[in-house]
Length: 299
Image (cartoon, rainbow, N blue to C red):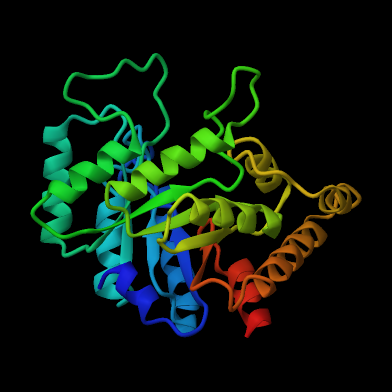
């Protein structure tokens, strides 16, 4: 079933989940891969009782999850009876290779794809038959003989690489890029995580003003430890409210308290999103406890 159809028939705010497949940089059959898969399945077993709208499966652009991501998406749909969304990146991917991947998704009856550019590899050089932007990937997906439901990423605070000449994030240019993906055929969007709801609401308001009318699902990831906070600030580029950062700093030597603070923050955000959005997307980091605690508090 398509995510767009699920969201259209939703009368109250639903939840969705994101999981991260094991990397094949670990030897096949190694304990790390088995432990990682066990953590994913444990997460899904615990959280599917909350009736998630869908589960998305990330995809590493350098190929480290190339052989685990799509099979995991198929297992989720077939074994756990939850619609899956397969992430797909396009950077440095020849069209012929992309076509083969789409045929596999078609064979596995996966209806939903999150179309992403992916991180640029070091010393990236565009290929004559390659794709460079997510909007190009959306266009290619729309040409395929299977009628995929296509989602795209949205960046409430702007993409880290979309900057002005002075190095500041260019929100206007980023919004144009977002609309280009929608104009090519995207049916829904999942936002980059944020810690200030006003940032999300401002993004939605600007998108609607620009003519974007697809659902924009807010992405939430609770701060679980100091490393998570570094990821949020560094890799994701999300701003951290000063009072929240200070609260965490005051307990930097108490991991349990940091997690409690992160969960409390996420609950606070979600309560103010409920009934204003069709779905809230949780970046689980393959751990069920924090997300489960948040959903229980909301119910």
